[in-house]
Amino acid sequence: MNHKYVFGPIGSRRLGVSLGVDLVPAKTCTQDCPYCEAGWTTNLTLERREYVPFNAVAAELSDVLDKNPQLDCVTFSGAGEPTLNSRIGEVARFVKTSYPQYRLVLLTNGTLLGDDKVIREVEPVDLIIPDLDASNAGEFAQINRPAPGLTFDMFVAGLRKFCAAHAKPIWLEMFIAPGINDSDASIARFSALLKTLKVDKIQLNTLDRPGCDPALRPAPPATLRKFITAFEPFVPVETVGAFRYKSPALRGAMPPDELSAMVINLAKRRQVTRQDIMLALNCNPEFLDRVLNDLLARGLIECEKGDRGEFFGYFD
Ligand code: SF4
Figure: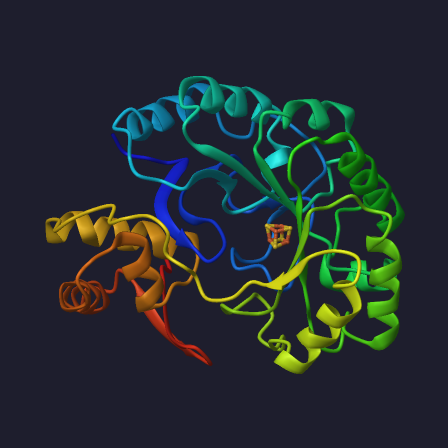
């Protein structure tokens, strides 16, 4: 079965080996962040609807999960905002009812979490990771570029309401962008805001893969240390560091065609390094090099050099 909505498993720096579920078409989101790895938002909207069909998502999930793969989690993520899908609750219940052995994770920008329906729908999710990248309206406009009608105050009020209502773990992710949200005044505002949110952990993140805006730079370690020093007295905080592999091998040797298809599938979702691919697919480096060279020669992927080395992407 060809998979359109389920992808991976991929190696995630935070979550281990994760099967991704894409609940909206690229690139449908309530925001248009310049750091987004999935490209600029083409459908900037607050409208919730069944962007991808529930039955098709459930069929693809069954196709993969019936084989009982070794995974650390199933994750709602992908190229856009998953809570925009009005049937996310049914997908969540389907996974937790049919495959309760898998931890279910939601990566969300948090903008719809104040909606009572969304609060009920994501109740089965085991771990929710919303974003908080702005400490005031000006930063929100710059770093998240929200859909018309969505204000910073609405976003924060919704996030606060959700954190108070949700009983399971919440890790808050903050993207630090030098020159936008890293001043001492920003850190003080973030600290005041965080003290009003019931979250279990803060994860500090900064540019790792190329974003949409080439002017964006990663925050240096000294900046991240300032955030840690400010937050640590009242909430656990960590930086999103190198991926630590938790699960045993997912796959042994596989035919070149199958590996090529999986590499293309990964590169379609986001730009990946050789290391990312090896961790995600657990493949032999020499074998992977042969497949990458073949895909490059055939023009099926492209290679771009960044600060962290070579990134492979898919450009159709
Ligand atoms: S909220 Fe997430 S998916 Fe949407 S534009 Fe920002 S980074 Fe991309």
